[in-house]
Length: 409
Image 1: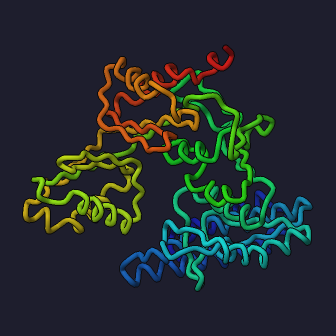
Image 2 (image 1 turned 45 degrees about the vertical axis):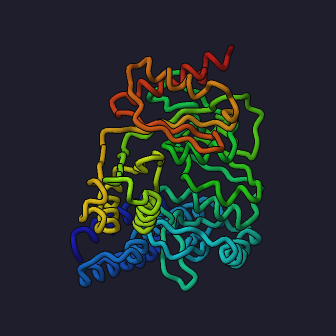
Image 3 (image 1 turned 120 degrees about the horizontal axis):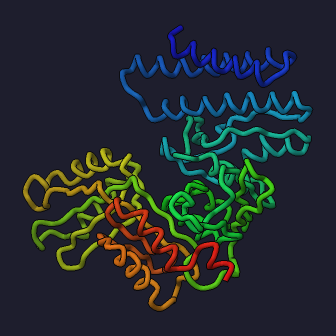
């Protein structure tokens, strides 16, 4: 047994002894031994292959959730609550995009009826692993970063839950990051669209895809603080009675701006853009914002810095011919930027709002590099240099009167 495997056993056995009474330790330790054995088998297989297949990675990283679910279920049993650990892969059916899979709701609904519903009907609490699933033919998948929230919403939709509660370490969805904005406040309610946009653009309260399964069935979501359960939290619903204007401002510092420009107007920028976006889709990369010009048909898009190496690799491969023959200028990458997103359903049709936001930024002597705003007017995305990010967020928060004092007035 190698040192890392020994450490895994030791850590989990010690936790088991601290958490559980002696009467339940033997059952739990047998499960721990079996799961860590699975992990060791997967790791050895990858070492023998000399590569890390995405399917094997998904199977391996889900072991941690399965260990946690096992110990939680045993702890609940020791406290007199009937519980059973459930592997999310036995319930959530997904497509075959390993590492960032999308749920297939109809087969998931069928599995949930077979696996979860009988437990609920029998008064047994299912402790389901987060962020993992499996393809229709049983191959393990994962749902991407922070996918446990997503798992919860998938199950809520599959089981027709009356509502979903998501517990985090903050009081709810706020008007701004309290580390940057001293008078940021918790929003009583936001719409599905607002919450999704805030999550997508950096607010670390929900997984960006959490709300998608719930919208069709109009299942409300509560975002609450597990360390302060008495706090009201934020309710996420289809509509709110909020006034016109923005609801919140969020930011992302760890991003990069990638620019692609034809060397002359003879090359179709539309085709280049289509191929570039196709390459990013194959690389399983999310584009955070995109802008383009009309005449030269150059365009730029924003991605997470953690995905930048993969972005450049896939782009250079996809556009290799155009780059080699000089039809395209070399791909430019600016890693010194940050993203600000101003979000609110009430911004739609509000005259002069964008101008006020841009003026608030310019008063801080900050240059705007790129702007992206969809026709829905739900979000204004602004790219600036990272060193001005905090000042810009505070300026926008104040200009749009989002804070505590503004609420009291």
